[in-house]
Every structure is written in structure tokens, then in C-alpha cells.
Image 1 (cartoon, rainbow, N blue to C red):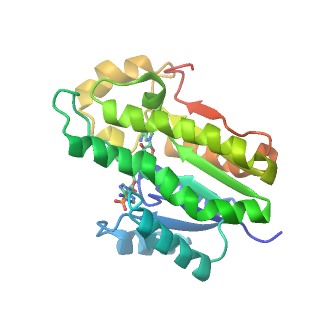
Image 2: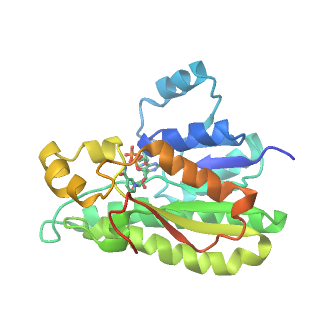
Length: 247
Ligand SMILES: NC(=O)c1ccc[n+]([C@@H]2O[C@H](COP(=O)([O-])OP(=O)(O)OC[C@H]3O[C@@H](n4cnc5c(N)ncnc54)[C@H](OP(=O)(O)O)[C@@H]3O)[C@@H](O)[C@H]2O)c1
């Protein structure tokens, strides 16, 4: 079988690095995207190369439809047709609704939700025409249950699952699956940036397994969803949250 090609957006981030390396270990040809403002992408690629990972990498602003169109077209020419898309890039701009500006709202909606349209639009026709594809959208437990100070993030992440379910219906007959995963608190910089006291008193106390999740645990779920054995899983929202929230 020819090697499948996977694109991981935000592939150099806390979860992204784990997803990218584990997918490469699982035999996929992995293309990572990074944000155009990322000044450390070269050193990350060098570090990965030293570990044996030869990733193709492209700067893509996932919030910008035209940039996604241009860069995904280039990936197609350079690397080949994309079989798997992991919509992982995301940001937070946490604050109470009272303090939230239109800009804080828009930035989070564009980067977390519009990005799923912007990227998936570029690859779906090809997946459907070839009769095989996997789209995995990274949402959050806070899209399932809401979170104080995250009206923007919770709305964007909840919106992702509506997108997943509707698209899954449209492409199921083409052997393309579309799923959401909803991680709880995973030990990446997005979470370790939360003040320690809040982590200890407000977050860890809610997690039944009494620890943060590991990026590799999330990567393992994604690898399962990419597999042939997962062909019957579509339109699902799979929680991976240590028992914090059962939906
Ligand atoms: N960590 C958690 O506990 C947790 C829990 C639930 C859900 N999630 C979700 O998991 C995903 C990854 O989170 P993380 O913890 O790995 O966070 P992270 O380390 O901050 O990574 C986020 C990635 O998104 C990329 N990104 C941000 N804005 C972008 C843009 N406009 N265009 C392209 N790329 C952009 C960043 O790229 P650069 O590095 O190149 O700037 C970064 O690699 C996010 O969608 C997040 O919401 C995380």
C-alpha cells in the first residue's frame, strides 16, 4: 500500500509535536503546518531531523482561507494528495464575557472554528474522489461543558462538532470519516500556562484520574481514528479527559 499523507495543523505545538511524531512512527508521511508568526520553526525542524523525523513543513495561517488554499495546493504539488487532515491548530483568549472584545471573540472563532472549514475545504474533494480519507478535528472538553472565561473558546470548540457531524453525513459513502476528539486538560504549554494554584485547586480536583493527560495519549487516539479498523467510526465526538466530564 502506498504511504498515506497526513497534514497536522499546528504540528509544532504541544499536542501537535506528539501527533506529528507518533503519526510518523506509525508510518504516515507527515506534513506539519506552523503559524506564519512562528520564528522558531527552523530550529524545531532541525531538532526533529536530529531525531530522525524529516517533516515537510509549511507556514499556514489557518484563519485565512486564501492562505490555506494556496499552501495546501503547494503541498499537493510537493508532497502528493492529502489522505488525512488533523485540524489541531488553536488558540485561547480567556477572559470573562464582560471583558471580552470583538477582536478576542473573532480571533478565537477564526483560528479554532473557521480553520476547520478553511483547511478541510482544500482536501475534501480529493479525498472523496479517491474514495478514502480521514478528518480529525481537535475540539475540547470545554466545548462540551462550557468553561468560565471561555465563551469564545467554548463556542468555537462546540461549533467544531456540529461541523464534524454534518460533514460526516455528507461524505460517509465516499469512505471518508470525519470525527471530533475532545481532550480534557493535557500537559502542554497551553495548560501549564494556567497558574499553578488554579491547576491544583480548580482543575486537577475535577479530573478523576488525578493527573493531566499526556500528549502521546491524544496522539494514540488520533492514530486509531486514522486506521482501517476505525472505518466504522464517523461523526463521533470522542472524549479523552481522564473522567473529568462524561458526555
Ligand atoms: N492542551 C490541552 O490541554 C488542550 C485541551 C483541549 C483541547 N486542546 C486543543 O488542542 C489543540 C492543540 O493545543 P496545544 O495544547 O498543543 O496548544 P499549543 O501548544 O499552543 O499549539 C497550538 C498550535 O496552533 C498553532 N496556531 C495558532 N494560531 C494559528 C494560526 N492562525 N495559523 C496556524 N497555526 C496556528 C500554533 O502554531 P505555532 O506554534 O507555529 O505558532 C501551535 O502550534 C488546540 O486546538 C487546543 O485548543 C488542547
